[in-house]
Length: 312
Ligand code: Q46
Ligand code: ZN
Ligand code: ZN
Image (cartoon, rainbow, N blue to C red; front, side, top):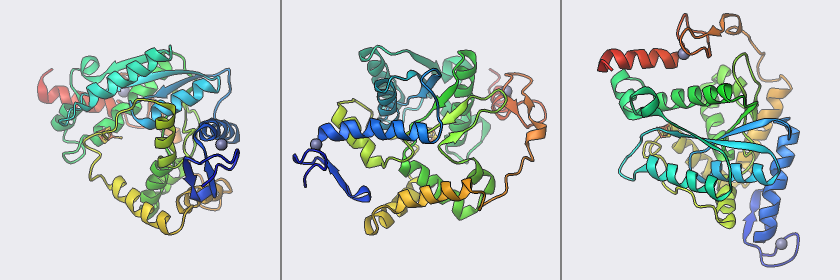
């Protein structure tokens, strides 16, 4: 297999694009494509301040690397979740993220959830009984809340996450199986800013997971290989595997599934936008973030419940 650009030996073959590239051209192609997606979906401009949520994994570190290479003003945010799971997941992911920031001379914000709120994610999950024994519901809620908080407090215009096509297609698959209209309407490369909330963007949403792995390795980025120990067995993993089976038989299935969805949604063919919650949005009485709940937002209610149970 030869590189489409220079004819040298290819190091990656992307069947869905009918294109093989050598390492050097692949390392050029990924940022070029990212820039194209940023412009196509109007994600942000070079004047805006971007906060990248970094977990120490291949996607978020690569995203940070790409944005900085492209000349964007991008700082990082690492959230210490206190997840151990036998592999010391949180410590190791923190170390790798710090190292990446240091090596590239980048600004990194670090929030340790336990230090900030008195409990780690697994403890918060256990005492509040959210999520049926899995900390993912509390974790997701906390991550969203903290990303918004740091973006607001430090004046970032945009929050960028490293979700890749495999992530997005799996979420889309799940939402489609459930016909969750509200979630489907909100899924996309850009979630516009709303009152008190920064715009959210996913610049890697059109790259396959294997492309991002190849990028991180080719670029020499040291990232955490282990997934969060709670990710295993999650429904999303099952959806990913199912989509991979389809992809193996018909290369390009995932990309078509996602892109056709975006087209249909944009053209208004799928759903009529309803603004039923918009009227009730107001700032949370405690943290000031927008919520549609009567007084406190779900994050602050979760913390209140935890303090009732633990007395802390
Ligand atoms: S939600 Fe669940 Fe993830 Fe949080 S607890 Fe781990 S798997 S990190 S994306
Ligand atoms: Zn080449
Ligand atoms: Zn709140």
